[in-house]
Image (tube, rainbow, N blue to C red; front, side):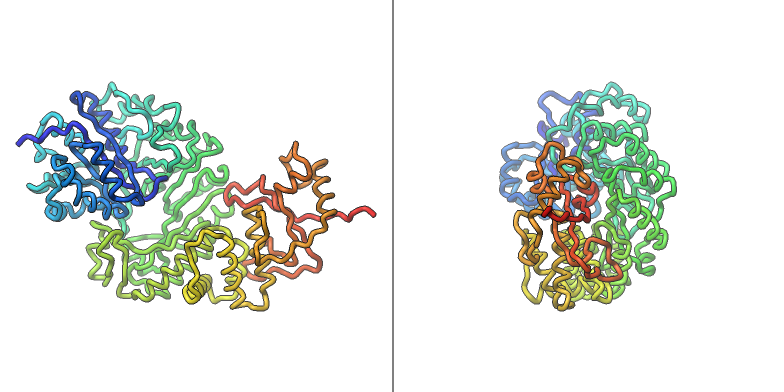
Length: 620
C-alpha cells in the first residue's frame, strides 16, 4: 500500500531549557540534506524546537499553524510527558498528519508503545539518520514500503535491527547545508574531502546564545547497568582530521561553550589526547569545552597537556557514582578509587580545570550510611561541584531488567526515579533529597568556600553537616528557592550559631569575606559588623595606587575615587582569607585589611583577586 505524500516533514525537539539544543533532530536533518539533496519539488524538511517550560497549548498551536504532513518527535525522559499530551491532541486538529517518534525514551519498548498509542504511524528505533532518510524517500517518492526499512516499529511489527552507521558520514551540524558532490560515497575519505562545508562565517541563528553539543564518537566500552550506552558496546570514532576541522569552527567563531556528548570521552586514550592537544595548541582564549571522562584512566601524557591549558579551556565531568565496592560490582562498574583520588588531586593542583564529580543514590547494596561514606570520600577530593543524583531506571537499561531482583521501586512517570530499594527506604531518600538541596545551595554555588570548611569542623563529617543543615531548613520552614543571596547567608550564620554559639563573630566574618569575594556590594549585609575604616587612610591608599599602583594593575586612566568604587576594602579580626580545613582561623592581634579587586578575577572560580594591605598613617 502506497504511503500518502508528506510534502512537509517537521522534526520536533522539546528541550529541558532554552539554552539547550537538540543535536538529534539537527543530525537527522543535516544527514537528509546531505544525502537526499534531489528531493521532489515542494517537499521540505524543517525543525521546530520548544522547551518543557512552555504551555503545551502554545506548542500545540505552533505545530498546528505549520501544518506538517509528517511530525516526528525526539523523545527523552525530560520531554516524554509533554510529547504524550501532544499526541493526544494533534490527531483532533491535524487528522491527516502522520505521527512518528524516535529517541531513547521510545526505542526499547516500541512494540508496546505502538499499541498504547494507536494514533502513531511508527517509531524509529536506535540511530535514526539512515532510517529517516529512507522513510523520507518512502513518503516523498514511494521508493520502497515501510516494511523494507530497517529500524522501524509500526502496526505490522518490527522491520528488523539496523546496522550501526559509519559516523564519518555524519555531516557537521552547525554549518549551512550545502550540496555534497560525493554524497553517495560511504567511505571516510570522501567525508574528509567534503570538509570545506564545515567552515562558516558565523554560528547559525538557531544556535545563538545556546550550548552547542558535539560528538566525536558513539558507543561506550563499559557496561554500567544504569546507562543506556552500555547497550552499544562498540565504540566508533570520528576521523580525527574531521574532528579537528569541526573543532576549529567553534574556535574561529568563539563559541562560549561546547559540550562533548561522547559517553566516556577518554575510553580511547590516543583519540582523547589528539583532541586535547589540538585544543591546547589552538585555544582562542574564550571557548570552554566540556568532557565526560573516566578520571582513573587518564594517562601521564594527557595530564601533562592539561597542566599547560588556559584556565577554563576545558572542564571535566567525572562519574564516581559510589565508592562501595559491592555496589560498583553490581552495576558492572570497574574503577580504581585510589587512582581516581590521585588524578583528581593532580588536576586540582593545576588550578585551571573545573571538575564536576557525580554520585548516584539508590544503587544496589548502598544503604544510607554507605552512601554517606561515598559522599564523604568524594567530598574530600574537593571537586568544584559535587552532583548528588538519584538512580533513574531507564527503559532498556540492564537496571530495568534487574529492578525486581534488587527490590528497586521507582516512579511510573518520567524520569523513573528511584523511590526506595531493599537497602534504602523512602524516608532515607527524602532525607537525601534535602541534603541534595543543601549541597546545591551552599557547595555547588561556590559562594561559601571559606565558611563551609570551618563549619564542617563542628560535625562528624561533611555529610552530617549537610544532613543537619537540611533538617534546620525543614524544621524552621526556610525556603530553598529564594533568589536572595543574603537570605542564604543569614540562614547559614544562624545555623552555625546553633552548633557554635560562641563563634558568631568568626562566622560573620567568614561569610562577609565569601560575600565580598564574589560581589562588590552596594550596601552591607545585615549580619556584617560595621566596617570601621579611617577614611583618610583609605583615601591616601587609593591616591597612592593611582600614582604608582602596587596592587591594582589595569586601572590606568581611572581616578582614585573611581578606583575606590570599583574595588572594596574590608577590615577583619580573624584570618578568614586563608584555607582552613583542619583548624579555625586565628584571632588577630591587630585588625587586617583585605583589598578586593573586581577587575581581576580568577578565570576558573570568578572570585575577585584579593590582597592583604597596610593602610598608611595620615600625615600630622
